[in-house]
Image (spheres, rainbow, N blue to C red):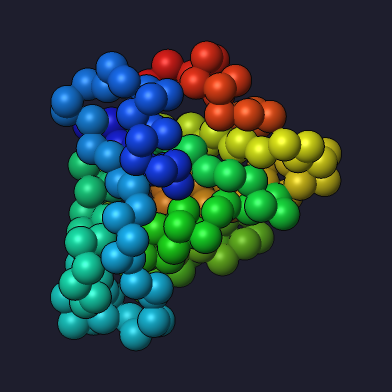
Amino acid sequence: MKVIIHDLKSEQFQTLFPNLNKETHIISDNGKIKSCIGCFGCWIKTPGTCVIKDGYEHTGAILSQADKVIIISQCIYGGYSPFIKNIFDRSISYVLPFFNTINGETHHQPRYHNKYQLSVYFYGESISSQEKLTAEGLVKANSINFNITQYDVSFYDSLNQLAKEVIL
């Protein structure tokens, strides 16, 4: 299954990508997402499922069924937009609360056996070279933590450029 996580307004997304496969699972901002409260409930009380019931509680389980995840995010100071960051926070149930050391870094152990490919498309005017380096490092760290097999990162000056070059 392909999963697309994006921070675009619904009408922007539909205009830019009108011909999506109906089997693609889309995670977008419906205005109701709550922030992770760090309660560890998704690890202890309801393993694999966030205890916050706002429509995003199954994000970790959705990722467990993905073979390809596409993220479209505004690049903000070399990181994801607030909505995309919140999705990553709320997806912590995708991994276990136990740790492994990988290349001298501490990362979570996987909960699920599947591995997916990740493509991250950052957009924004005048993204600096330092912001690009920071974003690439962030995606690399997320990929290690989420046990992702392969990832790529691309940068676009505008949404129109992104839509022309990215075929979802």
